Length: 374
Image (cartoon, rainbow, N blue to C red):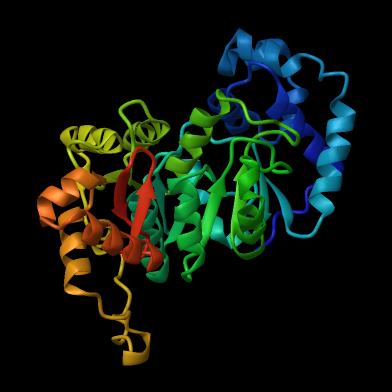
């Protein structure tokens, strides 16, 4: 799949509209429906524009471009020429069809990687930046199994759940799409530079923001609306009561998308947001298969059981007892001692063995939780 080979003049008109201060995407869509391409919009009188979309929109369209517009245009043209980079306009067949169902699709999209990734069945998987080890494991597993079923995993490239979702998505045929809140020429957070390179090479990165746009808090709710728009459903893994993930869920619900949430401990702060949206009607899910079934997607073929050589080593009776006592929520040494009735030395020794095996992770504050292999 390729974008339409827009001329520099056509691209300049689209870029000018996308950068016009105060021009809302919904108003722009009205003007495009009435007059056709951007060049035709700029040829209209203020009265003709105002009759379609109001006086404020007419003023926004006809305001002169910023003094550095030519520099910005040159930067976009140069960026578009680099391998793997694309600029898709609203009238381009490569534009993601799911976004066209939104009332306010962005006029311009900057895409790094595979354009076909934006035309697939997709599920968003989002959650807390300060995720627990269990949340990271759940996100990666859900993303991997959904991707193995051919579903594209969409997330926001943030730390925590988002990063785990992208890593899991890359392990399956569905791949992953990162929708970012900066210009497509930047990576935020810096810790995800390597992950972003891998996503751009194997899947796709998407931004509506002009090149060079830094990370700003106000950009991320708008980024979340694109995540919601691209998908059939949104899965929330961990979320506090005040969370960007809940904004994504609300926006997705308004667009008629399905909302799913993983439940957790009633004592865990990062379960409260999930429990809240479950109370508000989100579907409680415990397995990726439940998401596939609800959305009407085919389940992947069942893999053959692992050979004896790949089975994990057998654990001692004490280790199994301790893991069982640990459950799926963080616990202190005192709680574990009470639940297992082990002596201090035996408890510490068993915890150390489980940590070395990746079955248990030590958390700040003297708490322990199941590890990413637990």
